[in-house]
Length: 272
Image (tube, rainbow, N blue to C red; front, side, top):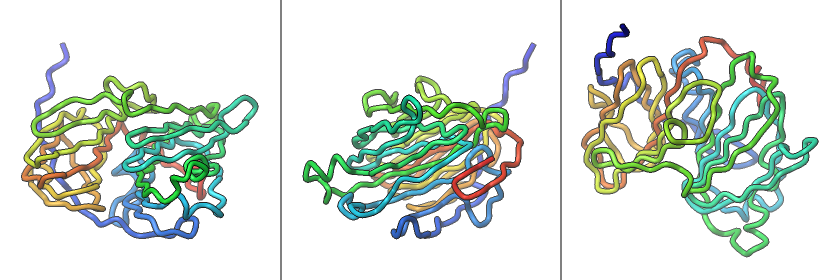
């Protein structure tokens, strides 16, 4: 008989500021890859970008680019955007409109074009000066799955499961109740504490990952390490994450998953 897993609270092993990097002529925040964290500690997560733009700023920018070998998830935090990706019949471009709270899950597999004409529809409708904030993250695929056919799934805000836990509102981007399939079991949550306070949420034993702070400030882990916006909190082992002493409006992404134990080969927009 399988023995029950003893519940243990995870520590915050490290807190590190995101660095600023250029992207398509703009500056974005890149918390992952992190300077002090090797891939083996965050496997299966490869990259996280946070960006703020006005869509009018992209008017004359060619945003379309290729990817291969991972799941590309794009989550809209504020405003709305539209985009195109080559997941249609014969590799044709499919357009998707992404309002605030929507999630685009793009499996790049053996290769796909991504981010074609970001915000074109909004600019045509006179909404180009609306501020738009989003987080994009790459989750690796097992080497055996890297030749999968590209596909896309769009979750509108009302299709994302929501629940209360402690003082927090949890949106399940990936995990129980979410239809988003990744190549490995994962739990990705958008956790918000509108009035501050605390929350303890289960995290499967064996998953590894981190929290990324979007707004506010809180103490993370059993060792209560404080973190603020644009900081990555690397998590130690355990079966739950405790967050306490959160200021009102604190919001963070919890990204955890079962590691593959494979070392990817990185080649710019391709991960083989």
